[in-house]
Length: 275
Image (cartoon, rainbow, N blue to C red; front, side, top):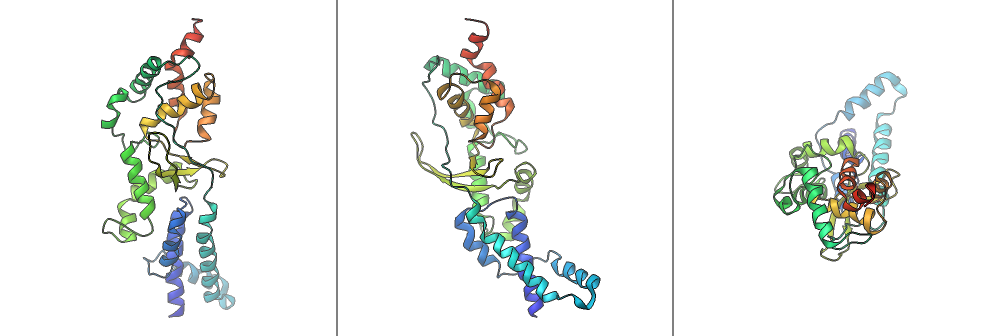
């Protein structure tokens, strides 16, 4: 019976680690992780693996010690996730109406429309009705990001009247899509309020070096994020430099988006033709 209990606990830990290896859970979820370790879970084949080891090792194999050791390691890994979430300040850009380096209010409004028409085929004023395909991993609406925050927040505890296993099964496709490109630590961070926003919880992942949280932006903020780096903090940087600086802060700004922004930038275009 003790072996059966140890196996069940190990199965739970491995089930959680499959998610946590790719997705870091916000600190508030640590207690839920520890609680889940004591509950039963659908078998993941751990007992079969352990018995297979025994058959290969013969009488010298200590089944109970192996299970106990693996469970201890899994628990330590889970408890370490809180410490592994970066502590840098996360940031979402404000909505810009005025700029610097030659960008007047009229130019910004026209450029914003030109950018979105080329990127998604809609003007900026039509964005609220725009719902990107779920297959598009880089362009997300505000409602889609809010749903992602909800999923990550409740991945281990369950929600919407569903137990954790049922909740994860319901959102398996969400997990699979993000895992394929963002296996670098999906997690939640709290953002302080800024002008025009109330702050709140935002969806993040690790930067490439693993040292910082970088934020997922909804489609309506993409223009402002690139604009701030390209034409507010700097005097119309080239595409490569703009993209590098975007990657330091944001999780889903693509090279194509930066290229479209600069190709439609009125100041950059006038400088190219010497106006």
